[in-house]
Length: 424
Image 1 (cartoon, rainbow, N blue to C red):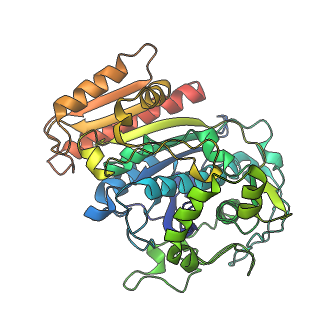
Image 2 (cartoon, helix red, strand yellow):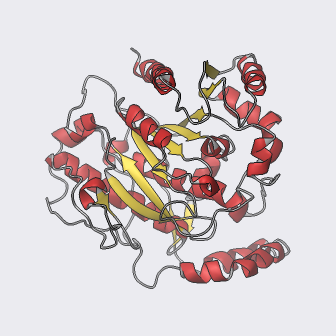
């Protein structure tokens, strides 16, 4: 399996819970090879894991295989553990609302990470922009954030929002990309959003630096909390702690978790306050804010492996149906529940390039139901939704040869996207 380039944590926007994350760069990128004849476009894919309560994590075999296959095409891949999975803190919920926010948190991080990656040709021909060092140069909170010269005229990011099983359920119910980025348009120093942005800057800067010098390594550990039994060589560059300056974080994670029941009550009361009072309560009176430089609108795609449909999706979320609260910045989350049949979800999957792939022996969702759902979306006017039903494949893709069929199908879909964008 491909080893991660970076292993790190970010706080969840939901309640500051630390989440385990990984970034994978392909062997082609690690070797410094690039095709200067093509117009470079940053491409990334997120693969979310199955249900935490059933043992799901980013070490799931299907997730790791997806990472390896997608990365072979030169696409940067990101994975993360939902709360309660692996070494991520917190506990799995029964409503999926916190987990949806976990996905939003990582998606926001990943978009900013991709936005700060320098084109290979720019790195190879530009002067050295950072001194070579075995240590990282963290970006402090008060450092000015300005657009990079290499972004001028660059094509928009291609982002594939994907997942397997429960992960695909949440991927399909994410807010739109513009709503995700709105969380970072203007942020207060010390907030979870600021911490996520700073981590994206630090890691992208490290990648650009190492790529420039051809010294990208997987064996340096910057975290003393390496899990027992795991060498740092197999964890890539490991980041722990926080990017923000000491004392700038608004509240400790322990405080957020212990007062979660109070926060829920405050959330209900907050809607009764006027916008000025709410702004002061969340951001602090007169506190300096950081603005996100404008990036070209990313192009969203969806990859759904073994998608879950009702009734199992309803039990996985305890029939939760949250709606977007347009008057509350902290509640930009989508409903789950029956949105699989709603116009909003259909519009998302039909209007964006989407691939759903499942087996005809899937016992979590009836193959007939999956087939009807997929055919209905694919038959919509101007639909960009595609699907593939793999014969004799179950939900866990353990049957002989079915995993190869799945990866071939996914590879062909991704190659079509790359070819159409590169004009090949």
